[in-house]
Length: 96
Figure 1 (spheres, rainbow, N blue to C red):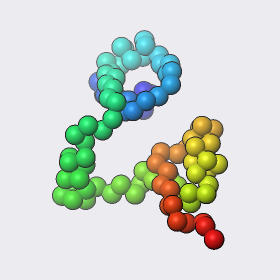
Figure 2: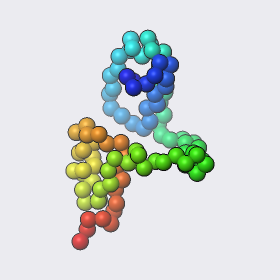
Figure 3: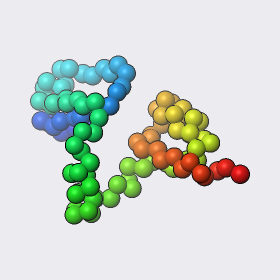
């Protein structure tokens, strides 16, 4: 919330555990929290933005890992709070 401008909106997508936030700052900054269980109807707009506006999605991929490392370098890294946003898994990579 601290990175959101005054009057800005934050979207919580998917399922998450308990969160805590500074309600005073939320109200004082006139920020809005919205939620959704998923990405309903988001893909057509995203595809349009990538195709027509040249939006580059590569910046959100923080790592690409082989399937053999998905627990250690994927799930566990996310649980440790490392700076991960989007982890891509390559199923055939890393196998002998």
